Length: 368
Ligand SMILES: Cc1cc2nc3c(=O)[nH]c(=O)nc-3n(C[C@H](O)[C@H](O)[C@H](O)COP(=O)(O)OP(=O)(O)OC[C@H]3O[C@@H](n4cnc5c(N)ncnc54)[C@H](O)[C@@H]3O)c2cc1C
Image 1 (cartoon, helix red, strand yellow):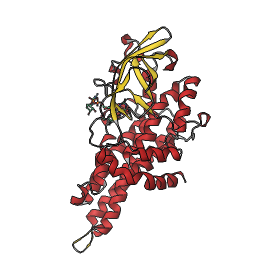
Image 2 (cartoon, protein in one colour):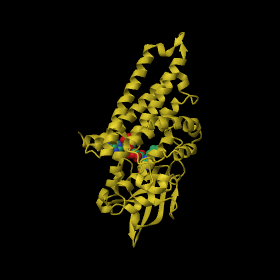
Image 3 (cartoon, helix red, strand yellow):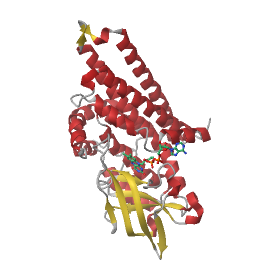
Image 4 (cartoon, helix red, strand yellow):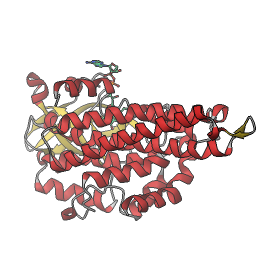
């Protein structure tokens, strides 16, 4: 029922704008409005804070169905979870109440600020500092590649509180867009997910109350990594949705397109490509849903499974979207058809929340 509901909404209210959002590289406001109106913008927020209280699998299905028509729009529910999960996992009750309530209502979005210009895969090498000053912390630094920066009201920011301790000297904070000293860089000009703004976040002597720290001092990096264990599964869901969207489009196209006097769907070479695409998608789906169940239960092997799902599903998304372009021939290579957008959008799923090389490092360190 959830899938049917999200699919109809996505097809009616999000899909019609997907090409324009990509072409104009603009924020998908129509998608945000539709998702908020239907309480689908941050479904993971627990009911006690006014949220829908969706479990990890339901959240994955929402993201998958939105990504099937517009990958940029699927980053609304996905990044709302990424940005707010540190607070849900490690924050005080007061922080949860204060920040989850507006998120659940749709009054605010949440971004996640881990990466920096010189700290990507090696996130613990970050330079952003948070220095205690009385009952406040003062933050200085630059966060890079921040999804929905400028659109979000709230930002989970990881910053160094004790440089001598490397990852154990990193703490997490909630920073608000309206805090003095917060500003944003120009939107990045990207290959895909062009509707999702990616900007730098500048922290220039941002003074915030000490109770905005998420959890204890020095636990920020552990919280950031624990968050990714859960949210890599949402990137797997995004990849899965993009791949399914491309397969669905190609499936329809091959029945219409005629060459050599018959629909190209009649050629076995084309049928085999479609069969492989569907097989890979189904394998990615099973891995992703199993990972979502592990996320919900907090299973011991979640770290492996989350990395495996993200890595596998994103590689599948790249393969399947590339094959979808192939099945449309020259038409697939143009912006008159959606599959080239899907191919460009798929690429990011192999890069963010840890590149697929980093996922393989994570899996190797956590072999089942
Ligand atoms: C559109 C977009 C949105 C993003 N959104 C966010 C966000 O909201 N919040 C956030 O915090 N970050 C975000 N990111 C950042 C993203 O997570 C990083 O780009 C990613 O982790 C890679 O870091 P990097 O770009 O510095 O690449 P690098 O770390 O410089 O990696 C370059 C290459 O080296 C490889 N490599 C690095 N180390 C190793 C190793 N040990 N072994 C093998 N290969 C290695 C990588 O796999 C990659 O192929 C976003 C990025 C993009 C492009």
